[in-house]
Length: 208
Image (tube, rainbow, N blue to C red; front, top):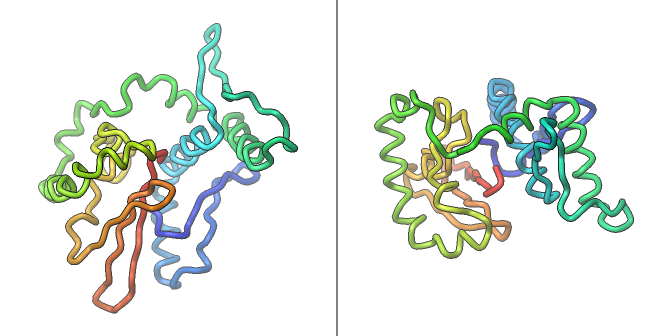
């Protein structure tokens, strides 16, 4: 999971990280190394985020996978931000079509891989159980931001943290004195203070 303030963007054929200069040098190196190891997951997450932000979806037409914008794009003068995001999405679609194939062929994105149950550790189960007293009473509010129970408790297809696991499995729930809130954009945000006195925050948004 990327720390607060660090975002991804597909630029000139590559997925790049933004906001690194605001991090402590040690944290910056850790984030870069984590992103390098989880590049494929970050690419898929950014692709999914752009689909959400632009109102696009993947469609199969005559055996061909296409991008469909709903409502249709009306030009940069009508909605410049959406136009820019759509351009980024179309570039990802052209250069990494496997992202769209994965999105269109996954009939049940919450369905666990047949081996995934073996990869749910006791620590993950403790995190999931710790998340429920916070998540369940807030389900009505979370739903207004686009969250669903399926998204919140989603089981990934690969070993955690790969495979787009829901936030209920995040180990932040069992951190000492962790504080959790819902951001204005619907992100679930955790914050805690390390032994060094440094405050750390992480967030998970409904479209990632």
